[in-house]
Length: 115
Length: 111
Image (cartoon, rainbow over all chains, first blue to last red; front, side, top):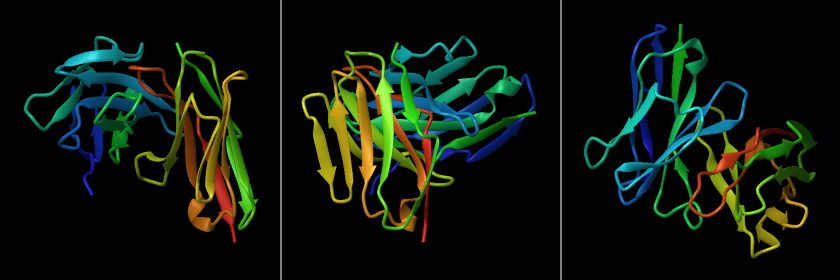
């Protein structure tokens, strides 16, 4: 069964460092998303990406965040200068269609710990 | 923007009992309402969804109801089993927008 894969599974970094989280969406999917989940809290939307550009972003997704699809398979989330409050589980998701018609498939997440 | 409220935050039931989780949403234009199950250490996985043109949908032991007038929807799990223990999230979206999730319900089914 096709799945969304994420690397690394866990990353520990110092405050102020740059972090790149990587995702390989399901191959025939066209929509890509990043969500985050602070421990014990809700899953929060960060950004959606379609046709090589951001289609929607939340207020959490400020100038410290960026996304990229550098090749035909990877989808990355970069945090330029990490803060303590960026510590969370980051989930990548993909769907074949928009949320109106398509199921979102989530990866297993990348846990980011900022010290 | 959309805001989704979910209750209860924790729910403990005995095996074989029913479990009900309720959500309300704020955006009357929302028309897609999925439910996700998240097991420990894993990403959320879709278990059932409902769209605004339907009032109820059932899949074996799981059912979802939608009341568009009141802007609430509910997940019903009958004959619960220990493997149903997980965190359940409701979500809502309107056409072309991202899913907005509730805070989650931790369901514990004891045998």
